[in-house]
Length: 159
Image (tube, rainbow, N blue to C red):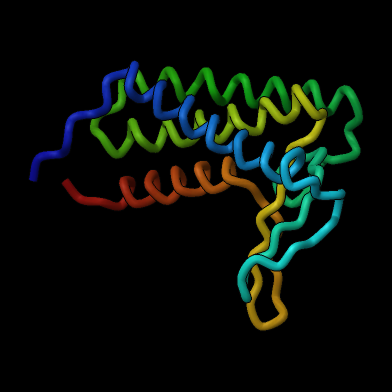
C-alpha cells in the first residue's frame, strides 16, 4: 500500500498557522467577546462546560510557580518545539506525518502566543461525565493531542 505524499512545507506551515489562528480566535471569544471572569463556568452541553482558567504552567498546571524565569523557560521550550517540528515537517515521509507535525506546531504556537500576550495560557474547555471532570484545556491542546494520536498510530502501522 502506497502512502500519500507529504504536504509541501508551505502548505504544512499554512496549516499550522491556520490552526494557531483558530485557537486564538476561540480564546479571544472567551476572554473578550463573551467576557468570562476567571473560574466562571457556563454550561454548554450536559458533558461540556466553558470555564476560564489561566494556566501559568504546563499540562495540569504543573510548574506554575516558576514566575518570570519559569515563563521565559516555557517560552523557550515552545520556540524549540516549533523549530524542531518545523524541521521535521521539511523531511516528513508522508502525509500523516506532515499533518501531525503541523498540528504540533499550530498548538505550540497558539499556546506560545498566550504566554507572550497574557503571561499564561488560556484554557476553557471542560469535559465531564457522571460527576468526573477532565482537566480544563483549549483548542491548541486538542491539536497537540491529535498529533500524538497520529504519531502513535503511525509508529504501529505496518508498511
